[in-house]
Length: 112
Image 1 (cartoon, rainbow, N blue to C red):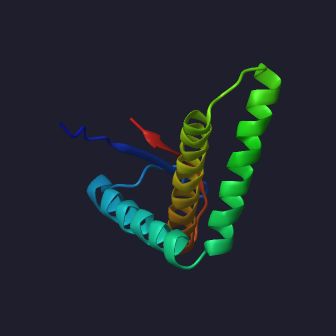
Image 2 (cartoon, helix red, strand yellow):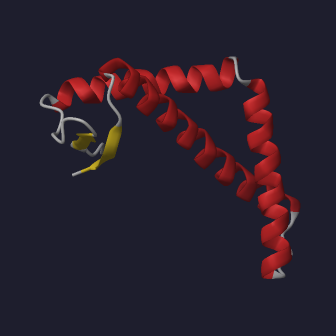
């Protein structure tokens, strides 16, 4: 079952919410797809950097928590970290595109 979320967007200059949330949802979905495509097809260096950072974070976790993880557990943890980084990249890309289109900074973006 898919849940439906309503978006809350507050722009810096207008201090108001976007009037038509369905247009905003379409716009952000489009930009999320664009960000994902760019990340997967064009920004190979960025992807590699994210993978390296995630591997370092896994090593740091093992050292700090003083636990041993087998290869499958380390790879699973790395993939969780990488997927979060990919998602953050795509949302950042989307927000940047929306801000550029509206010539206004987004102060708050979230679900209501």
